[in-house]
Image (cartoon, rainbow, N blue to C red; front, side, top):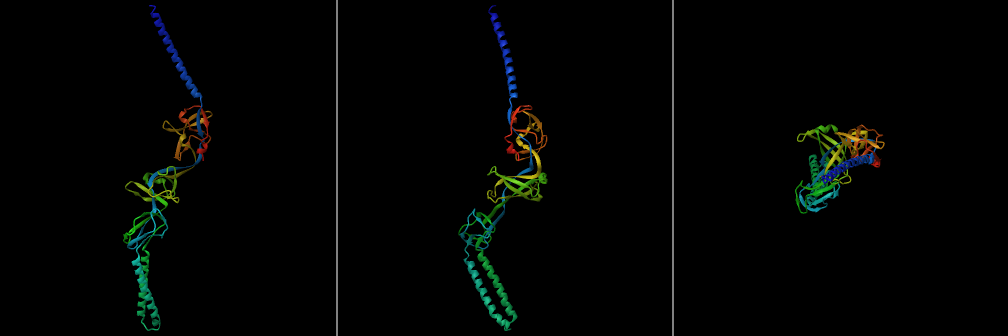
Length: 358
């Protein structure tokens, strides 16, 4: 029996220690929560500000040139000289290649000789006509012959000039389709010239979105090969008819490419500004959080924050329009709200203000 007493005592002591331990643990957790609640959370804040914001629509398209023309052989002949290569810039009318024009030159010279002879014949008969020694009909025949020979000579001179293939427009040589010694027939394509100073893209606009667009709307273009760069574009025309295959309307965007950074065939995303909200109250998009499927922000009041539901409008360029719930005197948390709850104490810094406002 004496042996049992120590065992019971040990059990009692252990139970007491366990209960005491539980009390200490609960107190420690409560203390930690209290310390955490009392410790200000560092946050970065901004005040809502006013600026123009645009409702936008995005569409993708392939860029092309609206000024693309073939340089063709106007007469048949063998290529004897190439004067330009692919990638070279040429002016309209510039010589690109020469064909063997010897036959054409001889034909032109023969036509010139016949013309000179006819002119001399007419001059010799002019005095006879004035003196009435030849009939008016005979003299008229001489004049008609001269006019026909003048036309023949001009045609041969023109054809001789066609032995030089020239650029139909100013632009870059996009393709060379010929090589030295190659025989060309009339109308064979020798080069393709593309003017890339102004490019276009055809955007497919769904029927439901068409009311948002009009010629004159501005757009920004981004291409995958140049991330972060934006190029200005302008909607110049919208087709009045629907494409029955895909149910869209075609809107044509023109892109200024005077710097030559873009090239036909590039694929890009166009962001079109179709509606201006002037002087809208905006905040950075990262200030918003989702609260029970509603948009909300943390508003700083003294050294604490209050969770406030807001009504939003247009979102563009990392900013969101606030329709209701805030005014310009409010201060909202932009960075650090993941550690907040309604009533949390904060240590606010507005170092981000200059990055967002204006």
